[in-house]
Image (cartoon, rainbow over all chains, first blue to last red; front, side, top):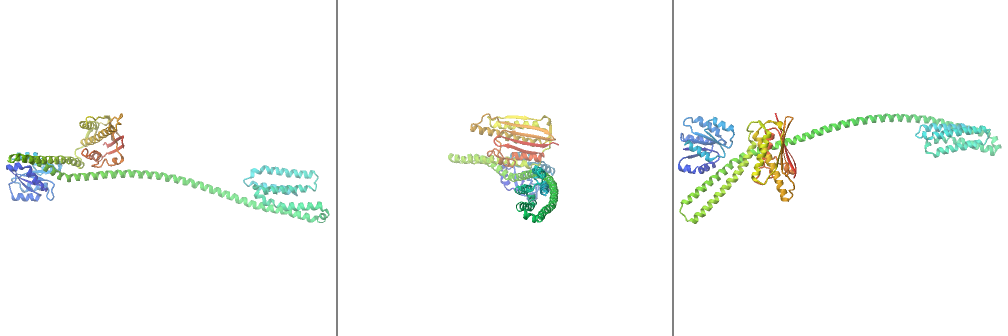
Length: 124
Length: 453
């Protein structure tokens, strides 16, 4: 399963790679990383219909996670990937907006990786 | 002739004296003087008008003038009284010649008579003139007196006016002073609440900034623990001498322990940051009708048992004075509960600290820790007081207790956010007032005032 993680913090990459080391080794997950909304869109352009899942931060400089979500839902109406929003601001306004724009799930930071792992495994 | 001079002199002196301050003192004197003059005159006629009687008159006149001269009170009549002296002198001279040189006197009789007459007239001229002057003086004095009277009245009315104005000014000053004091108090309150508000915002901002890196610290340390476990498993698979294996495993165990420490302290920091973020949390939750007495009671017990769980020795009297008329009040129950929990936790901490220090000093005596809550409702306001007979606070501590991160508890035991958050909840969340009164070493009392609408 191909998963794109979008976050402006580059350390997210090594964190995910370490956290999901076993799953990656077993070939269950395949992670790609984008460090901005724009980069994520570009990635999707280059790898159409490959992605199953997008995990995106909301608060990013430049294009925000919400903006990215909007673009994904309008630009890729066919074969839509699942989108899960991850944010430090777990208030209801943020949550409602994300869900309304077509997010499939909503997680708050700090991410509970066990929970995330379960959710990802369920999707497979 | 002598009689006329004496009588008029006395008359004149009496008139002058009457207009001075010593009038009444000498009234009797003038009365007796007149009687003496009258009786002398009577004696003169009864005795058949002897020539030598002139000497008695002259001596009496000289005595009178002398008396006027010596007595300070008669200063105003002195100069006029002296005008009789020429008359007396001429009279004595003529008597002298009449008796010693009768022949000489007889041939110049007329001259003597004329001299005497002139002296006599001289007396009257002087008196007349003096009287006129006296009159002018009296008039002047009366005028001056009148002027003085007028001036006195003016002065009195002016003084009254000044007193009135002074009173007005004093009143105005007091009103202004009061206004200034009120302004100062309001300004202080404003500064205080402004400081709290900006500190709260700052705190929340810092918390957000810290949250992200802190998440990384926690996540990476957690994953490192997992990696250590994996590494340990892998080491078992490798074929190396047991000694080396144990050494490697030892290092792995240390690494794992270090990561756990990092996780532990990271979590600690995380809970502080969570506390800070509660400052900024846009008033979540709705106000709802709550039985405040029950809420306070619940949190009082919660705080008490929380402390008892940590310290079995601890005990304190819980005193409640609830006003049953309060019923339910619209508040943010979770927030207000947090305030109660903070206040009670602090109160119990204060009494247990006092008990501890008294025990250490061996001066426990009959100290009974007591924490008290009282509630009142009147004038559309809810008054809550949480008091304890614990350690109290010095002024410099009291001044800072509502600032975020200020704590007197040992490191790790308090975040310094409890009271700053309580302040925020009461003032911003409920539009109320949170105040504190304390006596160092004796007691502390927190007063909450919440408007009910």
